[in-house]
Image (cartoon, rainbow, N blue to C red; front, side, top):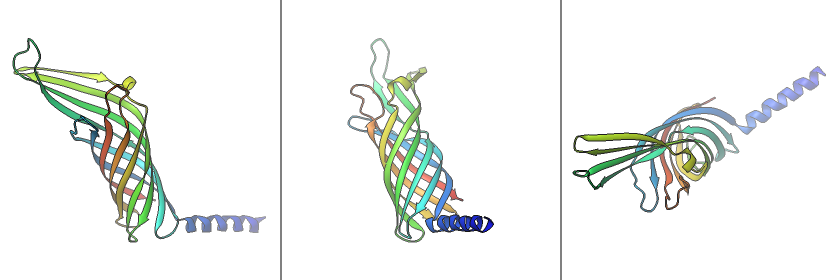
Length: 204
């Protein structure tokens, strides 16, 4: 029985070693926006933090699923004329639409240290608010509106980027995630997510 236990333990170690599975965590800086026809493209600084796993099939190909919390959203600014309000009103809207994103990236290693990453992503909205402000002369007003009920729960997209392994454990990533579905469940509102990411991570 003892010999059988040793053989099983040795087999598990060998399988794990040959599979080249690594787990890790990452944190990053994002520039997020909305895109689409007649949609403002104001960039908004945001952040991401998450966990990842990489399964390397061979020296060239790997798959890397992730679970990431990402603060997303966008900005818009418009000059408007309102009846009985003197001057031009500068109207601003800042959107905060946060997600739990699950990208599954297919990785092709062009060198032992650098990979090109591409794959689908599904996101689950957990927070959606908009802060609207207006200013005309010395008069200014601001209000935050909850948009959770007007935001689609699921967001689908595609990611394209690259990873550079600085060491066997440390890496940096650059990626752009392109949303393919409308953020808001509002007629004639066709805004989709866009997310430029730069992240640093550690594999264990």
